[in-house]
Amino acid sequence: MRPRECHNRRTVDDPRRPLRSRRGVDATGGRQMKMLMLSQADMTALLDLDRLLDALEEGFRALSAGRVEVPARTAVNAEKDGWLATMPGYGPGLG
Image (cartoon, rainbow, N blue to C red; front, side, top):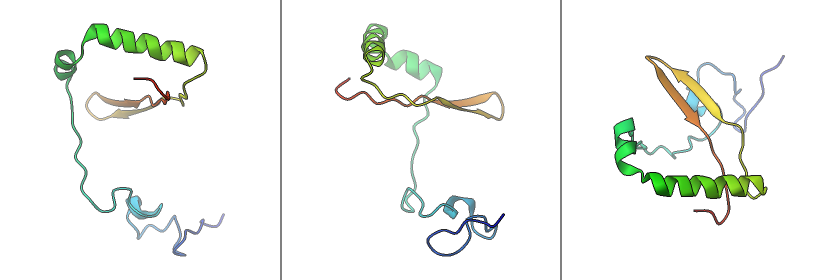
C-alpha cells in the first residue's frame, strides 16, 4: 500500500515530520493555547443544580424533538486513573 500524499507532496506517513504537522497546518496557527482545568470541587462550587437540571431538561426535550445534533461520545483512558470524555452537541437557539 502506498502512503497518501498531502498538499506539499511529502507523504502523510513520513516519520521525519512531527506528528502534529502530518495532517497540515497546526490548528493553533503556532500560538500557545491555555486550557482551564477544573476539579470536581470547582464544578460543585460553580454549578447551580436547579439551573443545570432545567438546562438538561430543555436539552433532552430538544433532542427528543430532533432539534439537536449529537455525534457519538469520544472517550480516552489516560495514565494514573485519568479519563477524558467529550460529548459534543449543537442545538440552535438553546441556552
